[in-house]
Image (tube, rainbow, N blue to C red):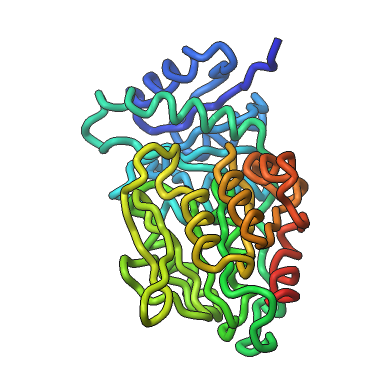
Amino acid sequence: MNDVTRVLVVDDSAYVRKVVSQMLSRNGDIQVVGIARDGNEALDLVEELRPDVVTCDLVMPELDGVGFVQTQMSRRPVPIVIVSVANESGELVLSALDAGAVDFVQKPTALATDRLLEISQELTDKVKAAAASHVHAPVVLEPAAVAPRSAVRPRGEFDVIVIGISTGGPQALKLLIPRLPSNLPVPVAVVLHMPIGYTQLYAEKLNETSAIRVREATDQGRLEAGTVYIAPAGRHLTVERNGDGVRTRLDARPLDTLYRPSVDVLFQSAANVFGSRVLGLVMTGMGSDGREGAAWIKAKGGTVFTEAEDSCVVYGMPRSVVEAGLSDGAYDLVHIADAILEHV
């Protein structure tokens, strides 16, 4: 018999608390052990009930969702899944993820509460994944750890770095990308599983704290060294060679992938264009997106690194690559940048 995941539901709307509790309770592996109306009440109930996972709204009276995440993670880290309206609170979502929230589920709209049932499966899946996650207080990047503007020698073994990441990704990339120097001699392409409407804002925020340029990828954009390209949510990112170099392409196809953008799709296209001179990196996330793409990279003679289990929030995607015998090395999050710089 599987252990039951005990959940605390936090939302200022009585209707939302009721519907979210009902959705979760329909799963026999989940038990809602309490409800809270705001962040302050949630802090007290976390200590009293010791839930395995907390679902939390962002816009609440007294103490809002970001304040709750910040305070709770500093007291005793617990897996927190944000459940909120996307178009009204984009920056708040990113702030909550920065503060240590594990994942995010988007409510349809603030008014269409009858559509809440549409998120039932996604919410259940993410709560169960959160229960198996390894959360910790967010690491504060020391100024000395930020890469200087010139820190690497001319191009080495690789012509491109491709990264696949999901649950726990926003926090992990916030530590990794600022460690890359502005004159990194290769481009970096990233697939991050994130709801539509967040990747551009996330890229802008990450660009502000990094020496290397960070931008959301565009269709037919030139792939340039010293730049990190983040795939926009809802479209696959691929690369293709043409007469004047390599360009990024965006497309809804293929339509049969579990995720869009897909790590597998990016990795396969990079392997086809760059052959053995691809470095693939599969980081924290649930599921197995990236395993088939890693196989393509290896088949072309390229190299694949994985994030070590100890630093992953969810050791799903890296595990699938390791167990398939496709990983050339596993590195803790704080050492991944060093491993990259040794090879590029």
